[in-house]
Image (tube, rainbow, N blue to C red; front, top):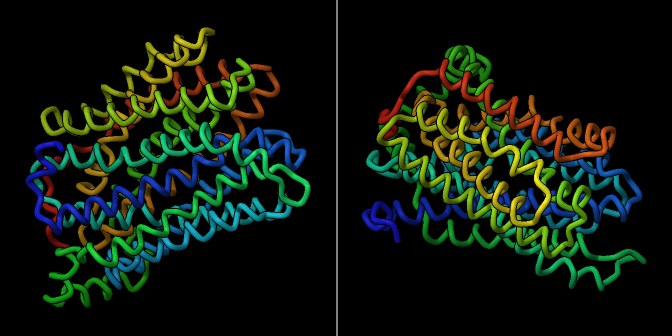
Length: 420
């Protein structure tokens, strides 16, 4: 167990674990569909680009959840709303397993997007208002890489369970992808852990005790007023997160499809490669998150973004299994290296009175702006006959934009997060 984690109190440790699990399993539920695009396409007789619309809807509706659950967390506390949030996305994930038509699946993925959109902001607020300021970069990297852990778990579930479920039938169709969505209901168990072990954010409790919460309610009588009050910072964060989300989803979501369509890799091999590149993602997030404590948040993000550029040939344009696996590992090491700084950086940039709403809402608005990327990538690949070239062009453009956007921001390392 890392040294900084051992130094936490019991309350701090449980708060971090709950937020980490919530984010990991949130990502697990999202990425199950990423691996099943080909299977869903075959089951409903739709093109892969049409199935990618489900990913678009999930991303597009996440800002609704970020604002809704964030506003509830400002009023009723981080802990109870995090429990509600996790229960909601787990129930919707299970419902997807029984979608009778492609249209119903699209509707359910949109609703899932609302539930998924709330977790990051509420969880980050609970975690960083509870954790000590020391080693915040390390915890940021570790917390954000719950996302990579979720992707890794989805890859493992796909490689291990999809062949088993494929032998079962439901209404005359293979139960393969549907079985994975049933497994995706497991995050509901985290709700019981939070109820038994996790305490409310001390910053929120103190704000309520001191009467600051009542003042905050008055200040936030209109949510648009609250956003306008911090408009320059909010606009910057939205644009920054547009670049960040294009960087992550643009390199991850269609990579399994790329391996299957361009290189005809099997389900098992695709899953194994995904497990390996998510180990790279986890390692990169922790390394650059920790590094940001020494060189600053901005420098760590810029370094990771620019270091992804030399990896493009291995990642998207090579042909052997070894080269593609190495390229994917290194690419996600850099992509999630940049992302490992995000929870701390956004929390430090966010004003105290809206800390449960501001970062998550800005994050998910960035998701909304970039949400059409998967569909555009899939259509471009279908038109030009290569997912690899499309992925290579995406990294080249987005990594440069992210580095430039980060240069324009301010450094806020070490900001006080103990008050609301």
